Image (cartoon, rainbow, N blue to C red; front, side, top):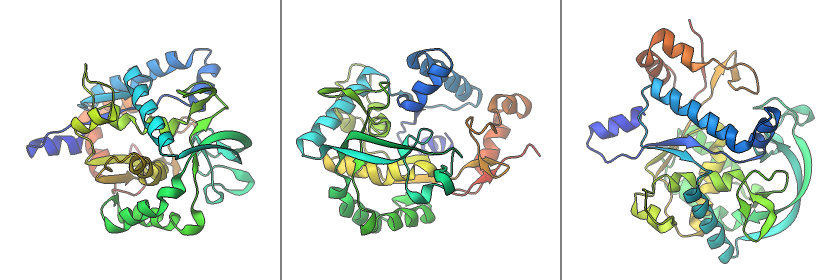
Length: 314
């Protein structure tokens, strides 16, 4: 919101997007635990987020909902175009899966006993037959783009992380479907699987550009302002934005976002804040006690960009 306001003050045309990715096993399990449907759950959460943004005086131009029909049509188009290029295939796969991350984890992402370093829960070993995207086909192309554009990934330390990961011995494809849940967009021609939440969610940046009455196509998103000037994302989802997303866009001949800015975690007692860890500092009482400007100033100005910042009411 601060960046959007600054750009507007400079006379730029701004389309500020925030919102939610709403599919995946994590949502389905949470809804089951609350004895409600996944759709009812995400509707409730969307209302809570939008109410909070209002209290914080955050003036977004669009709140993304990946359960919208317009969004689903863009996801289907992306899938079909990748399939037409021969970039989607099916194979069996085994690995340690973290439901909180909605991802299969590498060894460096787990502690002893296969515990996720972020969510502090043991990753479940799974074997599934999924659809895969040929990430390896675009590996060198993504690497060349990162190397040629020093400010594509910010800050520099995050860029170095991606370049380290892009070493040849890491080259791989990535799974873009799941059989473990039915809460998602069905795979075209195979209702036994749903499209992986990240292949789905990343398209939210483009579906959010469409205006009422626009044809729901990737071409229309180009006319409405794609590519994005900047994605502002958490460091735990950097790989999805700085490797998977560029490769998907390259596969269908679409331009890449100009910058991916990765912020650190807001921590409490040195741990990432999250409901799954039970260490959340609720924002509404903060706003009620200190007012929106004080809260906005603290989070915008009192933490170093790219680094973790430990929160204290002191």
